[in-house]
Image (cartoon, rainbow, N blue to C red; front, side, top):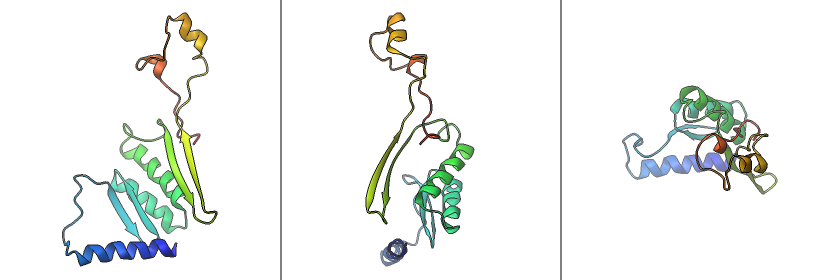
Length: 140
């Protein structure tokens, strides 16, 4: 965490050094909340703040991401939340390991090749009910 805190200090020092006295331009960036324990960026400032609160209580980056996503499900349910898929790259500094997670949705149990062939479908449709997957974010 020490390196991360020094990184935050460096980030703030660069902003001050460049003379940028204006607020962050929100036109092309995500809302960002900075604390002594880390930085969380999310589409909504409330979601970023939820993630930072987790960091302040001793949680790690994964905990903060889960809290931020849960809040996004509340403030922008049409864009995020438990009804989607999850893709993550997580670096464990203690173990010096990088993990990739693909929690994309699975096909429904009854959607088999045989079922599609009986419907006259020879390749996976790009739209319609047969292209729907079961959300994967909760399992991920």
